[in-house]
View 1 (cartoon, rainbow, N blue to C red):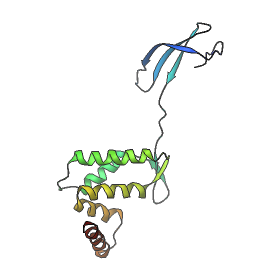
View 2: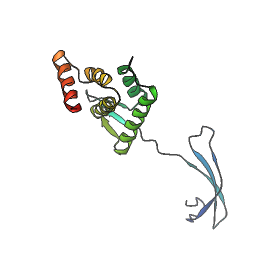
View 3: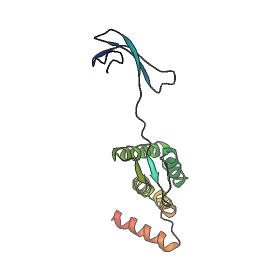
Length: 152
């Protein structure tokens, strides 16, 4: 850290503590050349992941929204909330590892479908019926047949 008084490039941290809101760290520093003290604040860079929806609008990624959709598709099914939360954790980690600021809702939907397929096939079909916007029974039957093909 460069000293604001003499521009010397070497300082040491004398005291460090979190701010009242716990969103950053306040550091007291001392210049090793002129011995003057100054305060710096360190905070993490919050990069909000944006979701590009089908209609091309954008909104911030909200993990609770993903979890809520998965819970709805698993109603009255033998899938624990812990399993669903773990699946959402894995989806969120995968999205963050993409190192992109924007992802499509289609990508998120496909990830949810993959996780539900692992957890419970009935929940997978329920989610697929809404996500893939089946217009009639034909689309529904086609998805069930695809699911059966993958199992065999």
